Length: 612
Image (cartoon, rainbow, N blue to C red; front, side, top):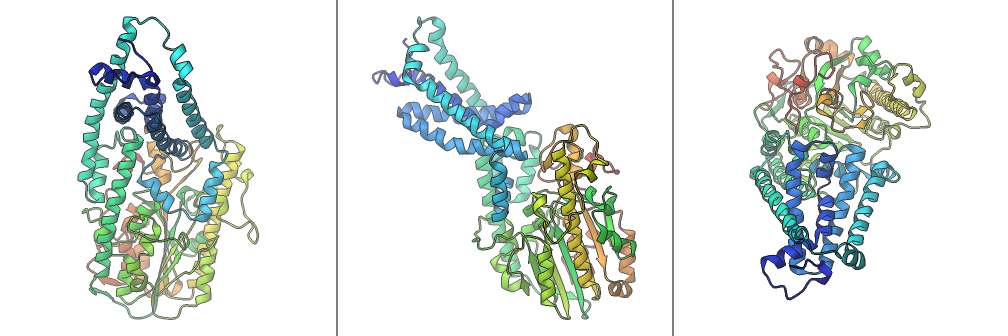
């Protein structure tokens, strides 16, 4: 049998096995280029010698590439090959860039991160992309794959160089060997596809998390091929739409079984920080005085810093849904079956004030949007929940406090919700260059950071992060001053932690090897958590102050904090659970499971805060 390239395929070969095998084998340049473009995760696994977890990804990638090759062979038109490759190339570039720069893959979390990004952060992202190592490698390797494909498909090279040799038995068998290997790996891919199909039985986030937990040792590797990643992300968004609709119905019909035990004026303030590494706070023992305002309040006996608070997730949207709903992860009651905490305060007679500095103003909301806007600015809540919400976004967080100061809220019970930009990447953009003197530089950091792998750029970025932390403390100090003469209590917690070259040459929230998972969890999942009270509040509520001080060393998770807020506001509701209120005598320390990995935080992190 004469094996000929696809350009010279004989249209009279018929539909026999030899014709099918010849056509598919003739498309081997397309097969290999398409496989690499749609399954870079398999290549990454091979390069890192992670063969155990890479085989499923190879099976899924080969299955997709085999199906595409078979379709191209059946149609017999080269434009279809170009179309498949053109569709796969942007996804490949995105995958390689995200992995090299941020340790991410195409996933629902990545989509949520994009949805949470405003115009300013988009420009920062583009500036990061242009000229970055990840972009150069992604675009360069994609171009190389296209050049290789076109070179191999070029008629003269393909027809006259590679196939002008004697038709030996090995050459005659080669097409059958190639197609047989494709078939074998495709069968394995079908098995893995069936396993992945179990995901579609999940109708809510709990089901999806159970699936991920069941496959936690393979999920990040086996399902990193682009087709499966896209399907997973689509299903995630579908589940999000359903759960968001359920949550909207619950809040729209929420009953009035809520009351406040106290009728005099009270201010409960909840401040949510962003990307705050607990070990970079002076009140937690950091070498630089990054929290002078909080330290001053602590020295004066009006602030408690909790020493062992963690966040289950490291994505802002996931954390906000846990922080701001009366959910119960211990019993499996998710955020979509739990009311919005500010709405509980509103139904208890509080005025609710929202100051949000991460909103994408002008953007349209939709059921498919899983970002911050559709949660905090959901149409169901706008008129029903908020007394006031800020009308603009500020470059720096202090603008929110200045806006509050201009409003001069009167008496009555008030619940204030602040969502800051905090130390969100890029840290150097979180504090002004004029009107405020940044207290730290790389020389200050270099006095106590002596690791050999640290270079000057890393030291400078650490100093910038510490300056952003100091500016965050300035914002909190201004809030303390605003509420100092009122009966007020302020609760501050960050959504999640971060890394800024704390134990390895990396910044952000990237994955870590198994032996470093404890350290990664410590820096990315542990969060600062402080409670401040005014002198008037302390005088009138000495038992509350004593309970706060005595509970400072308890283990906690930030999705239980709403119970503390309800208690501090004397809000009486059936949604309150004293066993989850960290300052209550009935409190029970939770099992602290991280999402989506389902790994136990306390098994990974020792009490002294160092990964095992």
